[in-house]
Image 1 (cartoon, rainbow, N blue to C red):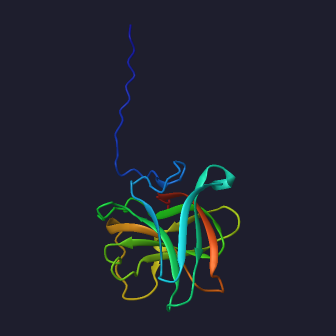
Image 2 (spheres, rainbow, N blue to C red; image 1 turned 30 degrees about the vertical axis):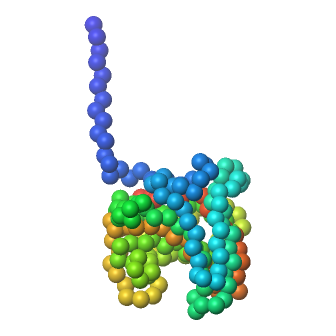
Image 3 (cartoon, rainbow, N blue to C red; image 1 turned 90 degrees about the horizontal axis):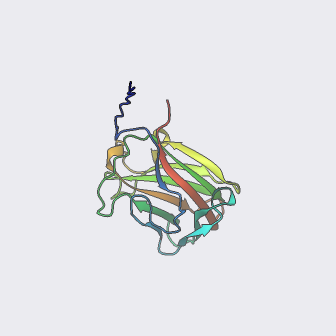
Length: 190
């Protein structure tokens, strides 16, 4: 006598599983989409990024950014980020509704989603958080992201092009550091 117990599996490419963009454990500035992390700033300021030990809860690796924001233009700024595609094509974030990451540092960190309709005007969808000196998990619902100036355009998650983390001069802050780790896109239950 033989007994057969069968199980059926269906693969769903639209599963609500989180997508880990980077946890930096490989020690390089290349994320899971195979694009590079980069730093940028206005012409007077400076931002340097690197991967260092002392990741989340002082274990593993994390992205470390050291910056100085200097006067000289109307809105001094520094940032680091990544594109979602090497050929600058769109990446569909439609199956997610939030970004989650761990960070520590000082200052007001603005998380920005770059889309096809915002990339030329720099009026990206933005949500800020006040950093603390301790590792903190931040979960930012896309519904809370706003464009901060210029003509608003409709949020289109299917046209995402990149991700930026930005500091602007304000509140007397001109120098700082930030640690960032375990950046992922998630689907929040609503």
